[in-house]
Amino acid sequence: MNITVINDWYFKPDGNINKGISASADLVDYFDKQEPGVQLSLWLRGLDEPLRFFHITVFDDMKVFENAVKSNAIERFVDALYPEIDQSTHVAPQCDVVLSSGAKLKPIRDINAPDVTVINDWYFREDGDVNKGLTAASEYVDWMKKNKPELQLSLWLRDRENPLRFFHIIAFDTAESAQEGRQWEGTLKFVDELFPEIHEDSVKQPKGNVILSSGGNLKPIPLQL
Image 1: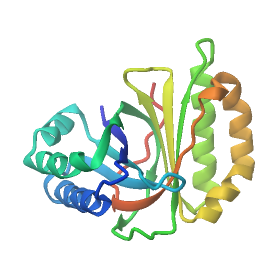
Image 2 (image 1 turned 180 degrees about the vertical axis):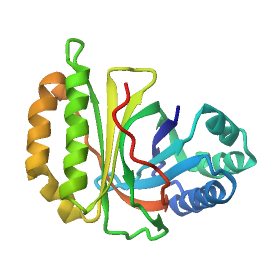
Image 3 (image 1 turned 90 degrees about the vertical axis):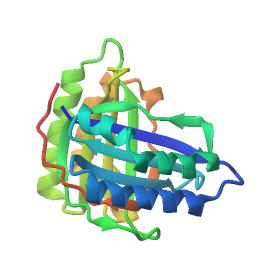
């Protein structure tokens, strides 16, 4: 079973962001050349919080993940990055992929890329119907694939430690399409079906620009629970 790690951290106010991004680019190159079991390495910078960065890595399985963690490349990356970030803010939940549209992401090295990625982070209510919510998610993915070519990726993850916690990572070609997406017919239908099942006060939706990407060899994944 594949596994995804979502690193979420803030640079120190006096941290060297360029050094951190350079270390990140080296890690992406390593994944591309040495780790065929890494399906996607996606780096985002917060639009509203420029010191906040996300790293989303999809591994084929736990063995690939464990081998990557033990690699010299990760050691070099940690040695370069960690002195620059506020480690007290660093969270890295491990998640299972439960649904994916696949990906048409291309390798990206342009920190001024115009696309926007939204990371939805929410919890189902204890009495919420997870199956109903994720069936709505599956229908939403199908609708977007058929109707919205500007959608690059729709990836659904379930937190291994918190089974009521889910992430939805959705990448748009442009900021305009991300904004318009809130009013799409499929979005409104999805919200009507999902939101009664989740804690609305738990919903977080940080947005980020893609600053680095390995591209992706993700395949469409049907709903898995």
